[in-house]
Image (cartoon, rainbow, N blue to C red; front, side, top):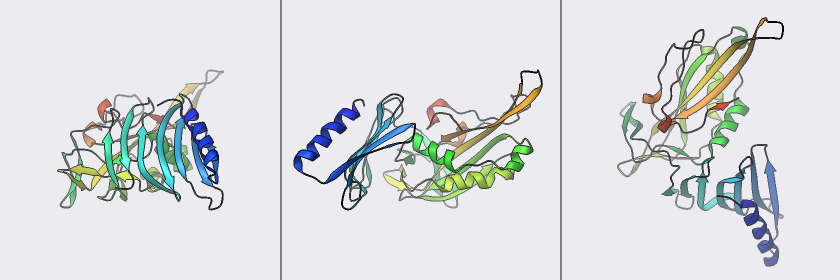
Length: 273
């Protein structure tokens, strides 16, 4: 979806002509630009909202605020401009799926006292952008100095459970080469907001699980004098839906574990922090 700035300017003119006491506001975080309106008296968000990817000028999110609350239909787009979904915040339900909506045959659903891969009509879905998730991870994650000094690297698999109301119910570590990084991962995951559309099975919302993979890599490179120096650590994170796409291998010399992700089940692009 292009031309959000033109729409925003037309809306500003409309508000001025109607005499509404609103002030246009822009927030720029370097990657995305948010455009919205603030009530001059109450200081609350009111009216149309746009979130734009600066690099392509594509709209990522459109919606409406009323008294600082999201109302009505909100549209979410991926970074290529494809519509992912339309969510109705008044009814708290999915109103439509676009070509960018992630499609899976199965997802981990809570059954009895454990999560079991079952067929679902839709997996748990974050009602924001993958850029939003990436920013949360980037802001909250901090690798321990002891871990860096020890040169520990590898792949950590963590998970969160999304309950029937779309809330983050729990976070935990599934596996990893060292416990030194566990607390940092859990802290980053605990910062994820309760802004999820729950998984659906047989027409009903169900408690499900979403996996997060954190990959830490330390490189050895040659400096200008030909000496080997350590660069990094480099951190990449992936969000995936089913554990079937996680495989651990030892194909990378000196590295150990790696994550191989099936393209159709990746719910975000690889992000380097």
